[in-house]
Amino acid sequence: MTGEGIVVSVSGTSAKVLIRKKSACSHDCSDCSACTAPTFETTVSNPLEAKVGDRVVIEGNTSKILGVSLLVYILPVFLLIVAAIVCDANSMGAASTALIFAVMLAIWIFVIRLSNKKFHTTNTIVGIIDAENKR
Image 1 (tube, one colour):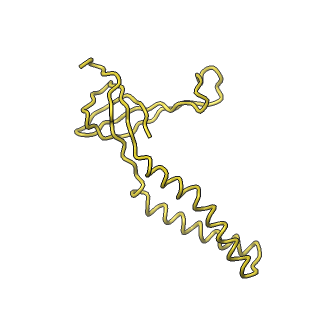
Image 2 (cartoon, one colour):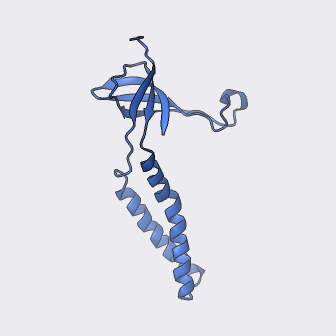
Image 3 (tube, rainbow, N blue to C red):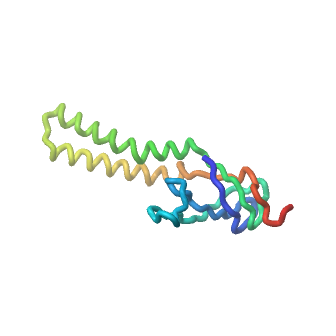
């Protein structure tokens, strides 16, 4: 996964990069006002020694993003299906299914909190598009 941003500060081997999210429709948001394109800052590895004001390309680990997506979106659906199968096999009603699913979701939340650092992605500056100081 790649993106572009502007370096706003540098500290040792890392840099803070200001990134403007692109709109989903790829149009000028000021024209339609259907969405917003907010900005956010992220700390990235700076092996190319980019300077403040440089426009840079950053790259992140896509496999970690996919892992988080799996954990957040697919696992709850899988848990609901397992709860329904278990309750159906044991002739339990809808209330029992909901209770079992609630317990599974509590376990799921616990797992997400434990794995928060495992899925933390580290972005890296892989290119300088436009150097502020024209080095």
